[in-house]
Length: 303
Image 1 (cartoon, rainbow, N blue to C red):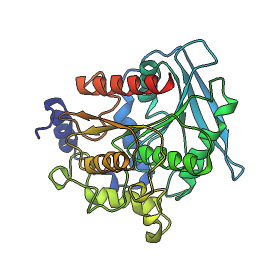
Image 2: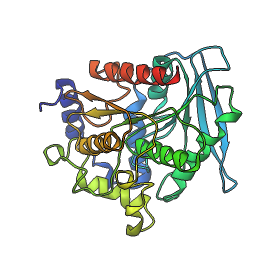
Image 3: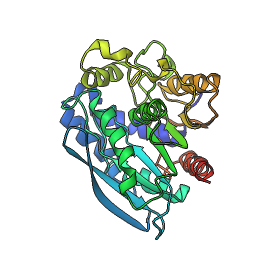
Image 4: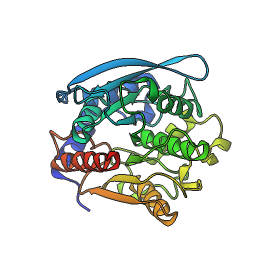
């Protein structure tokens, strides 16, 4: 399908800049470039924003940011995990995304600064994500109404947390919002070759895996290869897809597998959109529609 004209202009401008793709750069440089991509977006007003720290199981602490759209201490909570291939991205890069999501859902959002590869390899990020969700009881929110969300690699972490919560019976999750999620390490199943090179390249996806996983054996672990997990009994899900995204099949296959396992699922397709469009509401009408869908689905789940 044709790429949205504004998205095409952005892609052409990126190509003309001559800046190499992330996997051809040192990780630190790739991180800086990733942050710059989001830095020009204007930040929506949110009633209150509070930086907090979360204790982890190994005695460390990780940063997090709590977004409160109203002056109440009984708001439901969505715990959000940013994208960036488990290597890039941060609370700051996704500050606009989480502000938009808090306002759209009417609930609090906790954005988690989990530890990233290659300095911290799998399953550290998964453990950090679980610890963040389990710490919700110490926040000024209604911990009984709890959801997880994330985009791309963050969607992978959200799915892993949902599996953990089901298996261990805590915490109880009412929803999982997965935005163009990574769901499989098998790139033969998880890529649409028609869009290879549109924001993401196959070699880049492999580079992310190589810097995140401690060994090739870990690629089959259901905490990262969530498409291979047993999915029955998971909380209802919303899956947002970008039509012109090379990893769109990963979200499509996961939604289909969830439905086959008896999990209630709704999907939303950003027509003409590319990977990473979520949160660019000021640029793309389709992004604003996706934000509205996400907010409505979360608000419904919290009732």
